Image 1 (cartoon, rainbow, N blue to C red):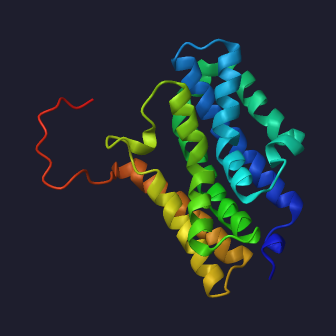
Image 2: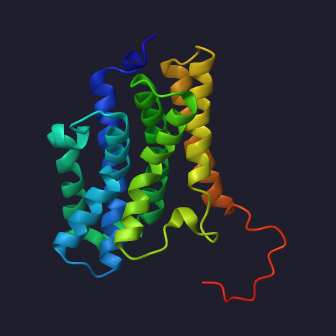
Image 3: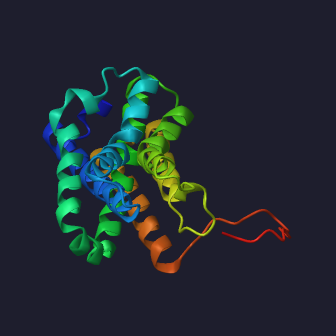
Length: 219
C-alpha cells in the first residue's frame, strides 16, 4: 500500500485540522497567561499549531508548505485564538480536556509527520525524527517566543517527547516490515496518545544526569 493511500484526503484533512485547533488553543492560552495582546495571542496560536509541520515541509522540500496552501490550516489557529480571547476563563476551566486533546494531536502528528517524511524519500531514522519534530516543534517555538524554557527540555514536566518518539518509531518499524496500514498507523497514534495520558496521570518524567549533586537552586 502506498503511504498516501493510508487515509482518504478528507479524513487526513479532518484529523490535521483537529490537531491544529487543539495545539493552537494551548498556544493562545499561554499568550493570555503572559498578558499578550490580541496580535500576540494570534501569533502564538499560529506558531504552536503550524510550526512543527512547517519545519517538516521545509526540510523535505514540500514547498510551499501545506500551512500556506490550505486556507483551513491557516484560519483554524485564528479561530482558536478568537475563542481563547473571548472565553479564556472558561477554556482554562476545561484545561484537563484540552490536555487530553493535545495528547491526541501529539499522537496524530507524530504518525502523519513520519509517513509524510518517508513518502518524500527520507530514510527511516530521518523520517522518525521529522515525525517527532512535527509533533513537538510548534510547542518548542511557542515557549521560545514566550521567553520560557521549552517544556520539552524541562525535567519537571511530564513526558511529552518520549510518547511521540515511540509513536514515530512504531511507524518506521511498520514501514520497515511492510505492515503499515490504517490499522497499524492508528495503533501507533493511539500508543503515543495513551503514553502521554499515563505520563500526565502518574507524572512520569525523564531521568536527570546520573549522580547529579549540583547545589544550584532548581527552577
